[in-house]
Length: 357
Image (cartoon, rainbow, N blue to C red; front, top):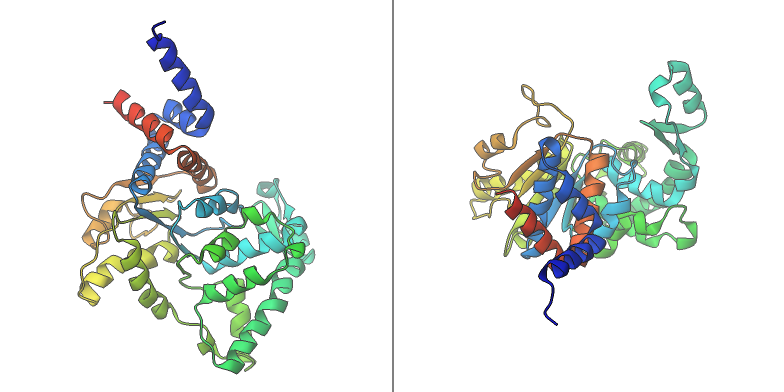
């Protein structure tokens, strides 16, 4: 009997929806405004990675405390993330979620707190981050017992490492029986196992940056055992040269500040300071709730980066003015579907684009 083409098409659509429910939801519902920007950024991200390109993530804010690792860790394991720039806080807070997750406290009513309420939280030895809190003893002090001896050994042996390399060694050395959080949701653990290229600009501005400074002050550790931010940039020159081969590497940014500005500068620095050829960034997307304003890096439009030779007029550019705790997991979940079902995902995206012409 001849195949019923309409029935076959409907069957194909049901099959695609079954394997790509989140991508299907985005293509069917995200039509305008920030939803459109999210959809288009997602499609272009997949285009680049599907073609063999890479993606570099810059993560500011308190995304580790917000448990971004639930989707970021699987994305790293799936080969959807190829390099990272993170604040020192995000680095250490991913570790805290692994070793002290059960000791965190949540405060969904935080908007109605008084100063007295927050003083009670302080006395409970909790450090509030919006609606959740990091436990002082189970997180900071427990990690300190492992990390400080590492610094002291490095001082004794005259070793020097980049900031994140200490954390890579630390997270890999933790006995799984000491995990309180889900190891599959720890992006630091996934990055350490993959030996993902990383920069942690301004790492001094973190809890363990402060703790390290105190041990330097006590003359128990040498400041020189931690390589400087300048050495991070020198390392990034090499990382970028390697990662940008082939189809190039994109830039996916959450928030603003140094986590984003530091790594994106590598392209003009290679060109003007090293006086070598450098491929431009192959993609740019920023998720931020910062409004465009005078002199604000976080609120600057991508076009401004063209004048600094960080992006070009041909770079696919997207700005999603929304909450990254909502948008980033959604995009990563859809991208994980694409990675698991590449042919169906590419067909779905192509059909979506064709329908909007």
